[in-house]
Image (cartoon, rainbow, N blue to C red; front, top):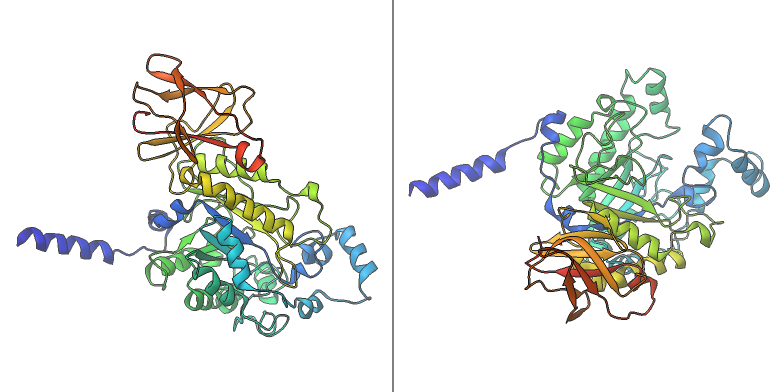
Length: 451
């Protein structure tokens, strides 16, 4: 009976371990496994900023915050709105009348994404749920008169997708924040009376599995009470076992502290990082929020998205792809087309993406640029340009006479020959049609003999 008793004691000690509110303890928390396995997520920037739909989601700041103001934003307002029109007057026009969370969730599921992150509150301070700390500046009191966060969460989870929420720590024009800022962040009126109660309400009510924090850079983490907040999330919150957080918790925290690392928007490391990371990027290369005047040439095309996804996953990252819905609640057709096309590509090639791990070599440039991932005893090779010849040479894999090479989606073995007695191989690819979603990135898999 003694071995059993010891096992019980060890298990109890492990589950009762608590994280203390300091970075050494918090940074040591293991990342929940679901996140690394997911690889692909969808980011959604949606709010009052979607109504003017001009410039970017930073429209209010560019118009009335920065000095001097962005003249293009000033001209846009002068031309299209009456004198004295204020930004809060956009809120009643945020109707979301065509918002169908079931339809959105269908699109996200079809994209092949495994998690969805909605903007719960951007820097403008407007919350997409009825926050009791944001009276009359939320989607229930005005605009849609609807709990957008809750409605989308139910639809997303019913399709077995993980649900996360983006939350801005700071708010451009909140008087309590501006007063704390004036005091050199020696006071915490905004944090104690607005930010923390609101995050608590959001987490307890919606139980997000991702908190995508932002807006941290003006003040240190001690002002935001970030370590205390994270300790609560990891120890006592209703999502303590599954919650994943990023690294935006105070000036200087990015790429140093938190759960996974964002480092910066559209971050791409030059080599394999030692820490789990995520690349967030947007189909619209000029904005995260909806723009009325976006042009096709300003959008990422499908081959670019696929190659970006492949490189991110090969380097151990997750890929969070953003779309900006319209103020009436529609995902623009061109965004839907991109997402569904990514999903079609993943139906064939997802085996080499989901739950994969970086290989010992992440990339090589021999006859064509290639990227590698691995899973168990299988190595996958992504060919990111159309080969000029049907024979492709790969120098890094180690081979044996029993090595088997196949193309994902086709179980037929491909012919190959060694470059050296036990390393490198030349693979003969079949004739393939030029379809960007299928041919721009190709996979070859190597089972157990490849190391």
